Image (cartoon, rainbow, N blue to C red):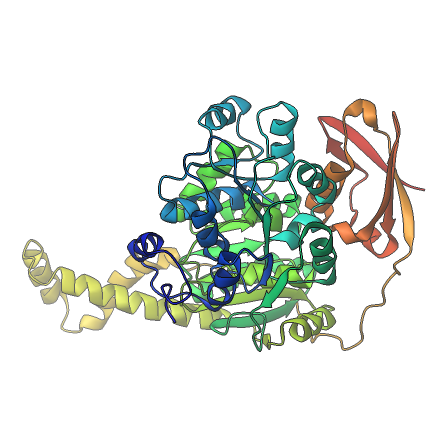
Length: 521
């Protein structure tokens, strides 16, 4: 089936063809006709399957280009995804003014964008509410609303922000909700914000892309960094993403790899937007080979040529595993995902296999000889290429004649040349401490709520959503693990599930430039 057959306008089809897109993906084929008919839609499909065009193609036909009001609103969980969505919309929008509004960019720049009277706004809930409160944004004329990556928005604590934004949107609008996964709380959200939505879930035998080779390596916790180095050298991937659960681990791992000679950069929520943009540009252009990121910072990154995704830390949520490894094997390519697990983590790997309905194959750790044999094969091809490139050069002929007279046996000569060329690339590798994974599952500490006290409060301008995001970035704790959050003038109490306490490995955290002490009541 082609775009014409599912009702897409010829003008948009030409735009799609110019971008190299000629055939709709399954999620586009199933949702575009419904959205064109004016229905509310919940769309679920794997990462990298074309969800952005699934909702933006119908939007392009419903916007009044001559209007001076915002008629289309797309809410995203992160600034990176907002930027990426805006770039995708620009490929198909014809004279439709679209702007991205997100935290980290100056208010002055965004005010200039809004003064241009855009037809469509893409952005994060927090910054959009800021601009609403300043009187710079009004959504009373919105006809088409999109909640992109809705599961991530709820996990990051944006439920209250969504309520605030939805209160300004009239009831006469169409809503599209798209996500890689459709957990039960998404269906609850749809009842709150949508009108008899059609649920379209592109069902696959597995949640992960078939062309991803999913691997797991087991070792002791203290050997994970050394194992990572072995695997990077063994496989020699060109473009790699490494996921960590916390900002502190991103920084620690980035420094470790740089000290060991790798070209890498870290990406997390503490970086200013200008620095984040520079990091992404370096990665996209190949100046750095390795990008290390937290899940929140990586949302919206859309690069087609990532060879491998490493889970340096196993994600805390099953859905995050799907999101992470979906960064590779995009646009029809194949890819690899490698998870590093401690020797006690087999039960967690089995849980991921059950969730994704795909096998994560256990691999043996490459030996030093394995790595050097791979290097020798690589050196062989480099030498063959050099021979081919230089076969017509004569400027070394006299030297070659002199060397040939020095010995009738060419092997010592070749051995010496190779040693001079490649010995500097050989390095020693630390021993990897490992044992077979234990079958016994780790007992949970329980799901009862305990209370955490912080010595900050409303005078420090803190908000409940902000605290949820900070605890996610610092400790990898998600929204569903929080209970009631009570903010008094100078104190805050946070209810949190007891089995999440083990993730809190600091006695204080920084909130709004103030150091807040963490105390368990």
